[in-house]
Structures are given as C-alpha cells and as structure tokens.
Image (cartoon, rainbow, N blue to C red; front, top):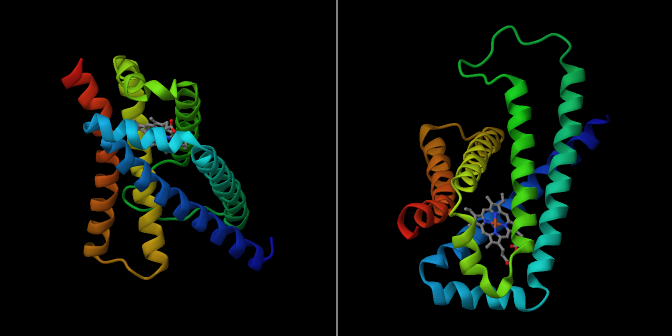
Length: 198
Ligand code: HEM
C-alpha cells in the first residue's frame, strides 16, 4: 500500500476514534441522569422523539465501520512489513491473540448492546434498564465489555500521545484519569441497579 494511503487510513481511523469518544462522553453523561429519574425520562423522551437517536446510531455505525476496516488494513500492512519479529518486546506485551479476541468481544458487546436497546420500549426506558440489570449475567457481561473498552481506550490514547511526542508520566496519568472516569460513569448504573435497587 502506498505511504499516502496508509496515512489516510491512519487519519480516518483516528478521526472515527475521536467521534466515538465524543459520543461515549455524551452517552455516559446522559446515562448518569438515571440517578434523577425525571431528568432521565425527559431527556430520552426528547432524544427518541424525532430522528436524533437514529442519526446518532447511523453516525456511530459509520464510525465503527471506518475504525475497524482501517485498523484491519493497517494491521495487515504492518504484519507484511515485519517479516522478522522484534527481538525484544515491552515487559508487559500482551499476546496478539488476546488483543484480537478482546477486540472481537468489544465489537460483539457493542452490537448486542445496541440490539438490546433498540428492542427496549422507549416509553419505559428507565424500567427497561432496571429489568436488564436484575440479571447477574447481564451485569457481568456489561462490566466485562466496559473493562475491555477501558483497556482499549487507555492503550489507543497512550499511542496517540506518543505520536504527538507526549510521553511524560503526567500525560499518562491524565489519560488514566479520563478513561477511568468515563468507564466508572458507565459502570455505576448496572452496579447501582443490581446492588442497591434490587
Ligand atoms: C452500563 C453502561 C451503559 C448503559 C446503561 C447504556 C444505556 C443505553 C441506553 C438506555 C440506550 C438507548 C437510548 C435510546 O433509547 O435512545 C443506549 C443506546 C446506545 N448505546 Fe449504550 N449504554 C451503556 C454503555 C454503552 C457503551 C460502553 C457503548 C459503546 C461502546 C454504548 C453504545 C450505545 C449506542 C451506539 C447506542 C445507540 C445510539 C443511541 O441511542 O444513542 N453504550 N445505551
């Protein structure tokens, strides 16, 4: 593949990643309104009232597809270029097969989650969530999905920082803080429903 084409793949992958991260922040904050039932219901009545939620879903589907196809192409080019493996790896190098499996799991998690929420009765969204997280299997499934997302975001953002030449402990600390806040904001909902509301 021509170097300009690889650059284009990398840029589109990063741009799709940024769009998804912005959505995740928005999604986490709107989900937190769960702790104020009336605000949650008002917000989702508005969100599902017109075409907004479908437009967001379309945008996210396009972003995921761009992100995944670019990642696969870049990985192929890298594998072809590196016929001989590195002699020395990072101390904490995770075997490629685990990375691949975790990405497949993350993708499956997102697809299952979207199918579940599309099948929800929009007028009963608050109760639908309470119903969903009565099941410990579902709580564990969501926590596992969130954990893989945490690792994926931490790793990708650390790579972006490295590309920008920012490798200090402070920058890495900030990435951890941001990612843990985001994932923690999601995780409190299944945990609260399962341990406090049930
Ligand atoms: C415990 C964590 C989560 C909860 C409680 C949750 C809750 C919800 C709810 C209630 C909806 C339906 C909204 C509607 O009716 O319009 C929804 C939709 C969606 N969620 Fe989540 N979500 C969680 C985590 C995630 C994660 C981690 C991702 C992505 C990695 C994600 C991606 C989506 C997408 C793409 C949609 C469809 C688009 C939309 O309606 O905004 N969610 N989620």
